[in-house]
Length: 108
Image 1: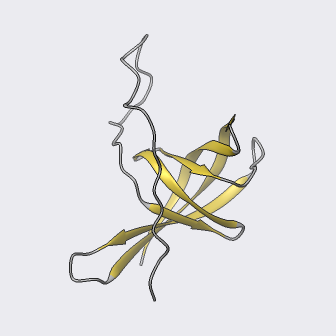
Image 2 (image 1 turned 180 degrees about the vertical axis):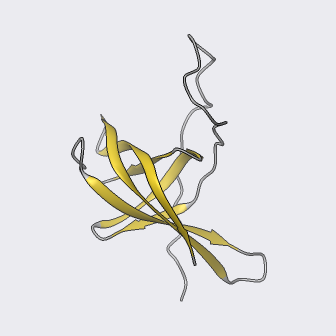
Image 3 (image 1 turned 120 degrees about the vertical axis):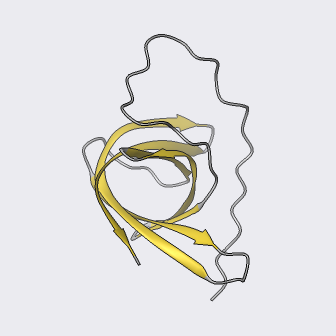
């Protein structure tokens, strides 16, 4: 099965401002994500959270399971399912940037 290619055009990460509150490093990666409601693409991830872009509206506090899709060079895929609560939703043009606090991680 081929996953749809998702491309997200965005500016470089903002310059460091203020005190960093994250406990783990953030990685700027673009991965396809799937949920029961639709698809999107990650903007950044760390051990504690995922920030992704989608055309779907999510609600603060909503518990969501996302599937992150990692494609191997050989063409097969590894999936990592993460479950957590929505902690931020920003509307940008016709898209939504959603921050998810990860509470559970499952690897296929």
